Image (cartoon, rainbow, N blue to C red; front, side, top):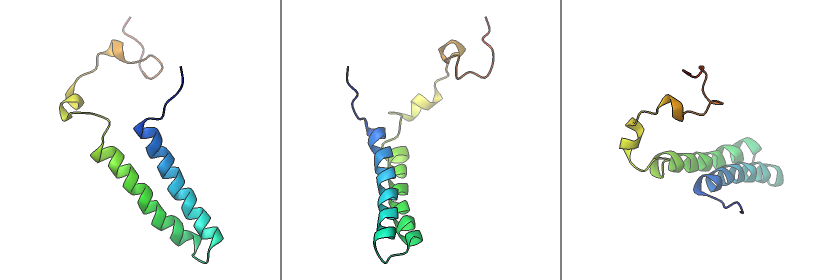
Length: 84
């Protein structure tokens, strides 16, 4: 079973690539590194905004109101002891 790239994997890759490109442009050209990282940081913010608000991790807002049963929470992530 192979691993396939999903949307959020590509978003993380694009964020890293835009910031890396900003650093590369800053080192390789006469443009100051702070300026190039700041400008391409805005591009990275654009990717983040798209991932959160345009193509969010839920399909419908109603999914955010569903209550999760305590038994459904993995023990590793639960800060409280199980009721058992």
